[in-house]
Image (cartoon, rainbow, N blue to C red; front, side, top):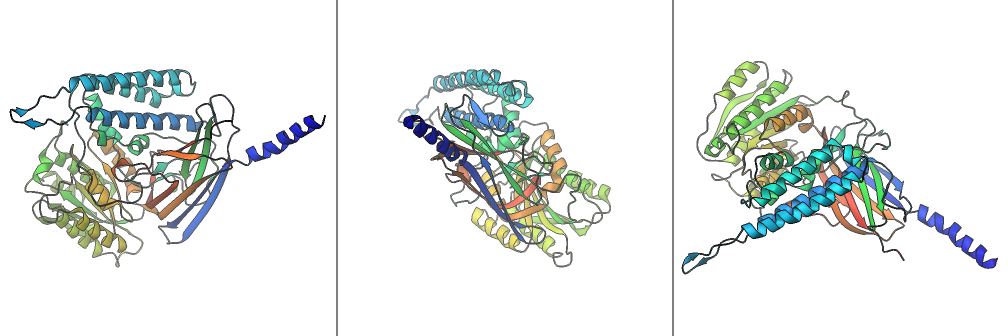
Length: 514
């Protein structure tokens, strides 16, 4: 009897210890509208360990886990494929022939094996097997494997990362649910370009796709998120896979600002447009980079009204002011000027940016209550004037300190992502890639959000209490070069509202069962 009582006591006292296992989330930010610092915290109990399959506090996390892991698989296989064939070496008799077909076929075969596992996982999950996004991603992955089996050299991609270290996340967006708008920290949208290349029968280079760019394509709401009563809220959801010894934490962000209530401030805006010779390339699309850029500028003009102040700067070998700052009253005349533009010269990006900032700065003190911003549209191929990224970063940082933000629209197959990332990694900065009708429509829909900072210096910390877990990976947050952070802290200089949502997912290894 005493033994039974002792065992019962262990069970009774053991349950509270398990129930005490929680994920604690805290956050802090500076409001963009009044510079006031606000903070908050929330926690959620971790489901009991030991059950079969995935046990989650929110059904929405299942799709997030699948898509995040699929994105990482795609990124890994693109890297394997690109590095499967070594660069040719030169000998006394010339270049030595390299057999690329065999190793590339091996990568394609390995990806097909992964696809079989994905397919089985989808069929076993009632929610995933009827989800259109999941089915489309699986079909796209099949197409990629078929393209790899052809053995073609990888295409697309960006310039190599610059040596100067970058800080902060490239992109973070997450929809928490609860009725308010989702928020994000700016960054690149690489999925559309990746999808285009795969559908065209190509194998993209490894740096075309990032996990956060992939996740940004999808709305991944948490269906049981608490209502948000502040400008920014963070809601955690938790899932436990006891068999695989994994704990997942999805962080959803929301706001008490609804889509219906949101209104952007009037703009004091300069658009800086690249008209250099490289903008004449078509990159396999139906029109040139400049035509895509002109479409983006025309879309911008159409979004403005008489309250907004607009100037337009062109740059090639030199910089030219096409339109001085003035209220937007005659849109047809402005659009006609844009349609008439042609490519010429080389690329002096710094000269164009400097003139754009100067035109905006003329009216900063005269226009209180306005959002002061430069929109740069370029392939970022620096070859004239100031060409080092560090100098451009200093220029943009100086202007950010003067309350002038920068939005960059990247165009072109060889868009220099590392340059644009560096110069928009400042307070109030963001960027995206535009090279399809779908991308242009997304820009058009999201324009008001892109030019409206919500909060600055946003920090989030997530801690797992009561379990000896080890942080394995973060999905949806990257730093320079695609490296995954090994810490649980999110640190973003600026938050913007976003219509697409996206997600951030933290993966932990649970201690081995005894």
